[in-house]
Image 1 (spheres, helix red, strand yellow):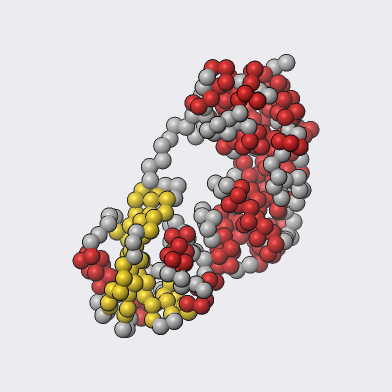
Image 2: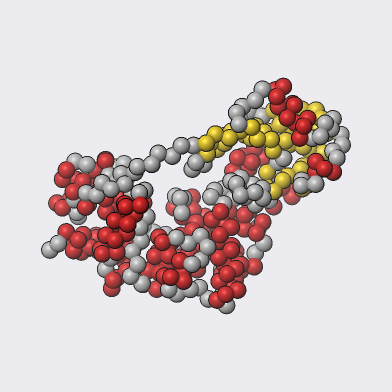
Length: 355
Protein backbone atom coordinates (compact mmCIF):
# COMPACT_ATOMS: atom_id res chain seq x y z
CA UNK A 1 0.00 0.00 0.00
CA UNK A 2 1.38 3.41 -0.97
CA UNK A 3 1.82 6.08 1.65
CA UNK A 4 -0.96 8.10 0.01
CA UNK A 5 -3.38 5.15 0.07
CA UNK A 6 -2.43 4.46 3.70
CA UNK A 7 -3.21 8.06 4.59
CA UNK A 8 -6.66 8.18 2.97
CA UNK A 9 -7.71 4.76 4.30
CA UNK A 10 -6.67 5.49 7.87
CA UNK A 11 -8.10 9.00 7.87
CA UNK A 12 -11.53 7.72 6.88
CA UNK A 13 -11.23 4.93 9.46
CA UNK A 14 -10.41 7.52 12.13
CA UNK A 15 -13.54 9.50 11.23
CA UNK A 16 -15.96 7.84 13.64
CA UNK A 17 -18.68 9.39 15.73
CA UNK A 18 -16.46 9.70 18.80
CA UNK A 19 -14.02 11.93 16.88
CA UNK A 20 -16.74 14.16 15.47
CA UNK A 21 -16.74 17.88 16.27
CA UNK A 22 -20.38 18.78 16.84
CA UNK A 23 -21.27 21.93 14.89
CA UNK A 24 -24.71 22.93 13.55
CA UNK A 25 -23.57 23.24 9.93
CA UNK A 26 -21.93 19.81 9.75
CA UNK A 27 -23.74 17.24 7.66
CA UNK A 28 -26.23 19.71 6.16
CA UNK A 29 -26.62 20.01 2.38
CA UNK A 30 -27.89 23.59 2.25
CA UNK A 31 -25.16 25.39 0.21
CA UNK A 32 -26.26 28.82 1.46
CA UNK A 33 -25.88 27.84 5.13
CA UNK A 34 -22.57 26.10 4.40
CA UNK A 35 -21.36 29.25 2.64
CA UNK A 36 -22.37 31.40 5.63
CA UNK A 37 -20.52 29.11 8.03
CA UNK A 38 -17.36 29.08 5.92
CA UNK A 39 -17.24 32.87 5.49
CA UNK A 40 -17.91 33.46 9.19
CA UNK A 41 -15.24 30.94 10.22
CA UNK A 42 -12.51 32.41 8.02
CA UNK A 43 -9.84 33.50 10.52
CA UNK A 44 -12.37 33.02 13.33
CA UNK A 45 -12.49 30.41 16.08
CA UNK A 46 -15.53 28.12 16.06
CA UNK A 47 -16.52 29.28 19.56
CA UNK A 48 -16.54 32.89 18.40
CA UNK A 49 -18.21 32.23 15.05
CA UNK A 50 -21.05 29.97 16.23
CA UNK A 51 -23.29 32.73 17.69
CA UNK A 52 -22.89 34.75 14.46
CA UNK A 53 -23.84 31.74 12.33
CA UNK A 54 -26.97 31.19 14.41
CA UNK A 55 -27.83 34.90 14.30
CA UNK A 56 -27.40 35.17 10.52
CA UNK A 57 -29.28 31.97 9.63
CA UNK A 58 -32.18 33.01 11.87
CA UNK A 59 -32.46 36.56 10.55
CA UNK A 60 -31.66 35.69 6.92
CA UNK A 61 -32.92 32.11 6.37
CA UNK A 62 -32.63 32.43 2.56
CA UNK A 63 -30.00 34.03 0.38
CA UNK A 64 -32.63 36.48 -0.89
CA UNK A 65 -33.18 37.72 2.67
CA UNK A 66 -29.49 38.49 3.00
CA UNK A 67 -29.39 40.21 -0.38
CA UNK A 68 -32.36 42.44 0.53
CA UNK A 69 -30.97 43.55 3.89
CA UNK A 70 -29.51 47.07 4.26
CA UNK A 71 -25.73 47.11 4.40
CA UNK A 72 -25.66 49.00 7.70
CA UNK A 73 -27.81 46.26 9.25
CA UNK A 74 -25.43 43.54 8.06
CA UNK A 75 -22.38 45.45 9.31
CA UNK A 76 -24.07 45.81 12.72
CA UNK A 77 -24.82 42.06 12.74
CA UNK A 78 -21.16 41.37 11.91
CA UNK A 79 -19.81 43.69 14.60
CA UNK A 80 -17.13 42.01 16.72
CA UNK A 81 -16.03 39.44 14.14
CA UNK A 82 -13.50 41.70 12.44
CA UNK A 83 -12.35 41.39 8.82
CA UNK A 84 -15.34 43.46 7.74
CA UNK A 85 -14.59 43.02 4.05
CA UNK A 86 -15.99 39.50 4.50
CA UNK A 87 -19.39 40.96 5.43
CA UNK A 88 -19.35 43.36 2.48
CA UNK A 89 -18.37 40.55 0.09
CA UNK A 90 -21.05 38.30 1.57
CA UNK A 91 -23.70 40.93 0.88
CA UNK A 92 -22.40 41.59 -2.64
CA UNK A 93 -22.31 37.89 -3.49
CA UNK A 94 -25.85 37.37 -2.16
CA UNK A 95 -27.07 40.17 -4.43
CA UNK A 96 -25.35 38.62 -7.45
CA UNK A 97 -26.96 35.23 -6.71
CA UNK A 98 -30.39 36.89 -6.65
CA UNK A 99 -29.81 39.11 -9.67
CA UNK A 100 -27.92 36.67 -11.91
CA UNK A 101 -29.15 33.26 -10.78
CA UNK A 102 -32.74 33.92 -9.65
CA UNK A 103 -31.76 33.30 -6.05
CA UNK A 104 -30.52 29.76 -6.72
CA UNK A 105 -27.13 29.01 -5.20
CA UNK A 106 -24.58 27.90 -7.85
CA UNK A 107 -23.99 24.15 -8.00
CA UNK A 108 -20.54 23.80 -9.58
CA UNK A 109 -17.10 24.56 -8.17
CA UNK A 110 -16.34 27.00 -10.98
CA UNK A 111 -19.53 29.00 -10.46
CA UNK A 112 -19.18 29.00 -6.67
CA UNK A 113 -15.59 30.20 -7.06
CA UNK A 114 -16.85 33.24 -9.02
CA UNK A 115 -18.76 34.58 -6.01
CA UNK A 116 -17.16 37.66 -4.47
CA UNK A 117 -15.05 36.77 -1.45
CA UNK A 118 -14.98 33.04 -2.25
CA UNK A 119 -11.52 31.54 -2.68
CA UNK A 120 -10.31 28.06 -3.58
CA UNK A 121 -10.80 26.65 -0.09
CA UNK A 122 -14.32 28.00 0.42
CA UNK A 123 -15.43 26.90 -3.05
CA UNK A 124 -14.07 23.40 -2.44
CA UNK A 125 -15.79 23.20 0.95
CA UNK A 126 -19.18 24.25 -0.41
CA UNK A 127 -18.88 22.05 -3.52
CA UNK A 128 -17.97 18.96 -1.50
CA UNK A 129 -20.22 19.43 1.54
CA UNK A 130 -23.33 20.55 -0.37
CA UNK A 131 -22.95 18.58 -3.60
CA UNK A 132 -20.33 15.91 -2.74
CA UNK A 133 -18.13 17.08 -5.61
CA UNK A 134 -14.50 15.83 -5.44
CA UNK A 135 -12.66 19.05 -4.63
CA UNK A 136 -10.14 18.89 -1.79
CA UNK A 137 -10.14 21.57 0.88
CA UNK A 138 -6.87 23.15 1.90
CA UNK A 139 -6.93 25.22 5.10
CA UNK A 140 -4.53 25.62 8.01
CA UNK A 141 -5.50 22.27 9.51
CA UNK A 142 -4.95 20.45 6.22
CA UNK A 143 -1.60 22.13 5.56
CA UNK A 144 -0.42 21.04 9.00
CA UNK A 145 -1.56 17.43 8.69
CA UNK A 146 -0.11 16.94 5.21
CA UNK A 147 3.13 18.74 6.01
CA UNK A 148 3.76 16.57 9.06
CA UNK A 149 2.67 13.22 7.69
CA UNK A 150 4.52 13.55 4.36
CA UNK A 151 7.45 15.51 5.81
CA UNK A 152 7.04 18.49 3.47
CA UNK A 153 9.23 21.47 4.40
CA UNK A 154 8.19 23.70 1.49
CA UNK A 155 6.79 26.90 3.06
CA UNK A 156 2.99 26.81 2.99
CA UNK A 157 2.81 30.55 2.30
CA UNK A 158 4.99 30.33 -0.82
CA UNK A 159 3.75 29.96 -4.41
CA UNK A 160 5.55 26.63 -4.78
CA UNK A 161 4.18 25.41 -1.48
CA UNK A 162 0.59 26.26 -2.34
CA UNK A 163 0.89 24.41 -5.65
CA UNK A 164 2.56 21.38 -4.06
CA UNK A 165 0.01 21.03 -1.27
CA UNK A 166 -2.95 21.64 -3.58
CA UNK A 167 -1.78 18.87 -5.93
CA UNK A 168 -1.20 16.44 -3.05
CA UNK A 169 -4.53 17.25 -1.38
CA UNK A 170 -6.41 16.56 -4.62
CA UNK A 171 -4.58 13.24 -5.10
CA UNK A 172 -5.53 12.09 -1.61
CA UNK A 173 -9.26 12.82 -1.65
CA UNK A 174 -11.65 9.87 -1.88
CA UNK A 175 -13.78 10.96 -4.83
CA UNK A 176 -16.65 8.71 -3.75
CA UNK A 177 -16.73 10.26 -0.27
CA UNK A 178 -15.57 13.81 -0.87
CA UNK A 179 -17.60 15.44 1.89
CA UNK A 180 -16.66 12.80 4.45
CA UNK A 181 -12.96 12.98 3.53
CA UNK A 182 -12.80 16.80 3.65
CA UNK A 183 -14.58 16.98 6.99
CA UNK A 184 -12.39 14.22 8.39
CA UNK A 185 -9.06 15.87 7.51
CA UNK A 186 -10.16 19.22 8.98
CA UNK A 187 -11.42 17.54 12.16
CA UNK A 188 -8.21 15.52 12.41
CA UNK A 189 -6.11 18.68 12.22
CA UNK A 190 -8.25 20.41 14.84
CA UNK A 191 -8.56 17.54 17.32
CA UNK A 192 -5.62 15.19 16.78
CA UNK A 193 -2.84 16.97 14.90
CA UNK A 194 -3.13 20.30 16.67
CA UNK A 195 -0.48 23.04 16.32
CA UNK A 196 1.10 22.98 19.77
CA UNK A 197 0.25 19.64 21.37
CA UNK A 198 -0.54 16.99 18.75
CA UNK A 199 -1.70 13.66 20.17
CA UNK A 200 1.06 11.67 18.46
CA UNK A 201 1.02 8.75 20.93
CA UNK A 202 -2.58 7.95 20.01
CA UNK A 203 -2.39 8.67 16.28
CA UNK A 204 -3.49 6.29 13.51
CA UNK A 205 -0.68 7.67 11.32
CA UNK A 206 2.10 7.25 13.87
CA UNK A 207 4.06 4.44 12.20
CA UNK A 208 4.30 6.28 8.86
CA UNK A 209 4.25 9.93 9.91
CA UNK A 210 7.50 11.57 8.79
CA UNK A 211 7.36 14.36 11.38
CA UNK A 212 6.84 11.90 14.26
CA UNK A 213 9.50 9.46 13.10
CA UNK A 214 12.05 12.22 12.50
CA UNK A 215 11.20 14.29 15.58
CA UNK A 216 10.11 17.30 13.51
CA UNK A 217 6.53 17.73 14.66
CA UNK A 218 7.27 21.14 16.15
CA UNK A 219 9.05 22.32 12.99
CA UNK A 220 6.27 21.61 10.50
CA UNK A 221 4.55 23.21 8.70
CA UNK A 222 7.02 25.89 7.60
CA UNK A 223 6.12 29.51 6.97
CA UNK A 224 8.54 31.85 5.22
CA UNK A 225 6.96 35.24 5.78
CA UNK A 226 6.97 37.19 9.01
CA UNK A 227 4.12 39.68 9.35
CA UNK A 228 5.30 43.19 10.15
CA UNK A 229 2.58 45.23 11.83
CA UNK A 230 2.20 48.88 10.88
CA UNK A 231 1.54 51.18 13.84
CA UNK A 232 -1.24 53.77 13.58
CA UNK A 233 -2.35 56.39 16.13
CA UNK A 234 -6.01 57.45 16.16
CA UNK A 235 -7.28 60.46 18.11
CA UNK A 236 -11.07 60.36 18.13
CA UNK A 237 -13.08 63.52 18.76
CA UNK A 238 -16.11 62.68 20.89
CA UNK A 239 -18.25 65.76 20.38
CA UNK A 240 -21.39 65.48 22.50
CA UNK A 241 -24.12 68.11 22.48
CA UNK A 242 -26.83 67.21 24.94
CA UNK A 243 -28.32 63.90 23.94
CA UNK A 244 -26.50 63.88 20.59
CA UNK A 245 -23.12 62.65 19.38
CA UNK A 246 -21.41 63.01 16.02
CA UNK A 247 -20.31 59.94 14.06
CA UNK A 248 -18.54 59.46 10.75
CA UNK A 249 -18.81 56.57 8.32
CA UNK A 250 -15.54 55.09 7.10
CA UNK A 251 -15.81 55.19 3.31
CA UNK A 252 -12.24 54.97 2.07
CA UNK A 253 -10.64 51.66 1.18
CA UNK A 254 -9.10 51.20 4.59
CA UNK A 255 -9.74 49.12 7.68
CA UNK A 256 -13.34 49.02 8.93
CA UNK A 257 -14.79 50.29 5.66
CA UNK A 258 -18.51 51.20 5.97
CA UNK A 259 -18.46 51.00 9.76
CA UNK A 260 -19.01 54.04 11.95
CA UNK A 261 -16.57 55.79 14.25
CA UNK A 262 -15.99 59.27 15.64
CA UNK A 263 -14.39 62.18 13.76
CA UNK A 264 -10.74 61.25 13.56
CA UNK A 265 -7.29 62.76 13.65
CA UNK A 266 -4.64 60.23 12.64
CA UNK A 267 -0.94 60.75 13.30
CA UNK A 268 2.18 58.75 12.48
CA UNK A 269 3.26 58.67 16.11
CA UNK A 270 1.91 59.47 19.55
CA UNK A 271 1.57 63.22 20.17
CA UNK A 272 1.57 65.37 23.31
CA UNK A 273 -1.25 67.53 24.64
CA UNK A 274 -0.12 70.70 22.90
CA UNK A 275 0.18 68.96 19.52
CA UNK A 276 -3.22 67.33 20.05
CA UNK A 277 -4.86 70.69 20.79
CA UNK A 278 -3.28 72.20 17.66
CA UNK A 279 -4.56 69.32 15.54
CA UNK A 280 -8.06 69.62 16.98
CA UNK A 281 -8.07 73.37 16.40
CA UNK A 282 -7.18 72.78 12.77
CA UNK A 283 -9.77 69.99 12.37
CA UNK A 284 -12.55 72.14 13.84
CA UNK A 285 -11.63 75.17 11.69
CA UNK A 286 -10.61 77.17 14.76
CA UNK A 287 -14.03 76.83 16.40
CA UNK A 288 -14.08 77.32 20.17
CA UNK A 289 -13.77 73.98 21.97
CA UNK A 290 -13.00 72.73 25.45
CA UNK A 291 -11.41 69.36 26.22
CA UNK A 292 -13.33 67.68 29.04
CA UNK A 293 -11.44 64.40 29.18
CA UNK A 294 -8.78 62.40 27.37
CA UNK A 295 -9.11 58.62 27.67
CA UNK A 296 -6.40 56.11 28.34
CA UNK A 297 -4.99 54.30 25.31
CA UNK A 298 -7.20 51.70 23.66
CA UNK A 299 -5.34 49.14 21.58
CA UNK A 300 -6.41 46.71 18.88
CA UNK A 301 -4.21 44.30 16.97
CA UNK A 302 -5.17 43.52 13.38
CA UNK A 303 -3.42 41.13 11.03
CA UNK A 304 -1.06 43.74 9.63
CA UNK A 305 -1.69 46.74 11.88
CA UNK A 306 -1.45 47.82 15.49
CA UNK A 307 -3.99 50.51 16.38
CA UNK A 308 -3.64 52.81 19.37
CA UNK A 309 -6.71 54.97 19.93
CA UNK A 310 -7.33 57.86 22.30
CA UNK A 311 -10.81 59.34 22.79
CA UNK A 312 -10.90 63.09 23.32
CA UNK A 313 -14.19 64.24 24.84
CA UNK A 314 -15.02 67.80 23.77
CA UNK A 315 -17.58 70.49 24.25
CA UNK A 316 -18.11 72.80 21.29
CA UNK A 317 -20.36 75.87 21.14
CA UNK A 318 -20.87 75.98 17.38
CA UNK A 319 -19.38 74.20 14.41
CA UNK A 320 -19.34 75.44 10.80
CA UNK A 321 -21.09 73.31 8.18
CA UNK A 322 -17.75 72.71 6.47
CA UNK A 323 -16.75 70.70 9.54
CA UNK A 324 -19.95 68.70 10.02
CA UNK A 325 -20.95 68.06 6.38
CA UNK A 326 -19.55 64.51 6.55
CA UNK A 327 -20.61 63.93 10.14
CA UNK A 328 -23.80 62.17 11.24
CA UNK A 329 -25.68 63.57 14.22
CA UNK A 330 -27.01 60.67 16.29
CA UNK A 331 -29.10 60.48 19.44
CA UNK A 332 -27.44 58.50 22.24
CA UNK A 333 -30.44 56.16 22.41
CA UNK A 334 -29.87 55.19 18.76
CA UNK A 335 -26.16 54.32 19.05
CA UNK A 336 -26.98 50.63 19.34
CA UNK A 337 -28.26 50.61 15.76
CA UNK A 338 -24.86 51.43 14.28
CA UNK A 339 -22.03 49.07 13.45
CA UNK A 340 -18.72 50.02 15.07
CA UNK A 341 -15.18 48.62 15.02
CA UNK A 342 -14.34 46.68 18.17
CA UNK A 343 -12.16 49.46 19.57
CA UNK A 344 -15.03 52.00 19.31
CA UNK A 345 -17.51 49.54 20.75
CA UNK A 346 -15.26 49.00 23.78
CA UNK A 347 -15.08 52.74 24.46
CA UNK A 348 -18.85 53.18 24.08
CA UNK A 349 -19.49 50.33 26.53
CA UNK A 350 -16.89 51.63 28.99
CA UNK A 351 -18.64 55.03 28.97
CA UNK A 352 -22.09 53.37 29.18
CA UNK A 353 -23.26 55.38 26.19
CA UNK A 354 -25.55 52.53 25.11
CA UNK A 355 -28.17 51.56 27.65
